[in-house]
Structures are given as C-alpha cells and as structure tokens.
Image (cartoon, rainbow, N blue to C red; front, side):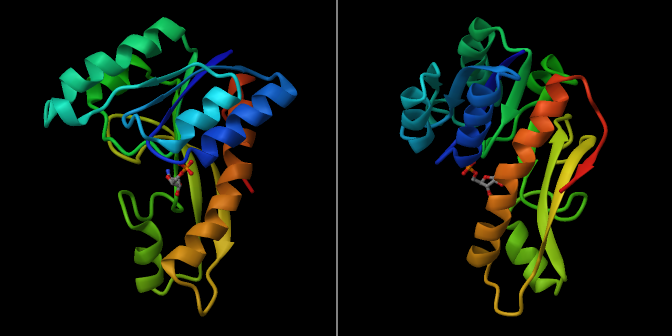
Length: 194
Ligand code: GRF
C-alpha cells in the first residue's frame, strides 16, 4: 500500500505514521506534501527519506479548485493508495475529496461528532466536559464528518488549559493514527477505541 500524507505544519502525526510504516513495513510512505513551503514537517520527511512537495495555497487566493489542481500533480504522480491528512489545515473541495473516496483519512483533535472545526480543546473546556480526545475518520465532502475509524479519550483535568490538553491529546493522536492506518491498509474497517 502506497501512502501520501498532507501536512501544514510541524507534522508530528506524519512523523509517527512514517516511522511506523518504515519500522513495520505495513505500507510505504510515497509523498509528504504541504500547502506551506515553510512547514517544518517537510524537512522531517526529507530526512526520513520520503519525497516531499510544497504547493503554497496563498497565490491562489480563494480559488480552491486552482490550488487543488496544483496540489493534485505531485499526489497523482506518487500514485498513492491512501491519502492521510495529518495537521492539514486547508478545507478541501468535494471534488478533491470525492477523487479519493473511501481512501482518505484525517485526524481531528476532538471526540467527533463533538466539536468539528477549530479550537476544539477550548470548546471542550468551556463546555465543562469531563473528557476530550481525538478521532481518525474517513474524509467525506462534509468537514470532519466521515465514518469514524478510531478514537482515543483523554480525561480533562481541573487545571487544564487548551495548551495542556492539546499536548496530552497529541500524544494519543500519535498512537491512534498509526494503529488505524495499520488496520486500514489491511482492509479492516472496524472502529477502534484506544
Ligand atoms: C494536531 O492537533 C492535530 O490533531 C491537528 O493538527 C495538529 C498538529 O498536528 N490535525 P501535527 O503535529 O502537524 O501532526
């Protein structure tokens, strides 16, 4: 299985996915692409021997289709079987998503269906929730809405801030995403709870 990973920033989830693929051989990382040439994850991917590409979304303004047409070029050239969004912060058009229907995953830092969108930890704290967490789901045209493949839960502590909570959730993301991708590449679609 060939796996392409899309990032926008540090790429800590991407690093874990690449590490587990390279260590266990359950799939092959064939591309790490970003919408930001300055994304620190690109250097990390290159150092791990994974081909990279950067397509700056800014010159395209609000023309998502034009940006995606450029982004598609290195992705299609890499011939991925699976596309993983990992800290990728651009909303993709239904046309782009539909092209990878059933084989595009995303990790989102909340227990979906709670808190789709941004500022998930702040919202969980403001709601007084007892727990937070992360979700890996199949990407569909509706943002943060596709079939859930796995979740990991984290207890919210009395003195948590969005930053302390995000840090604890991120460590669980790093366990959840590889576990879900491992199973996904084996054709498993059962939902897992970590
Ligand atoms: C993480 O909070 C992840 O849940 C979200 O993007 C953030 C950064 O992820 N999708 P990464 O370190 O770039 O993988």
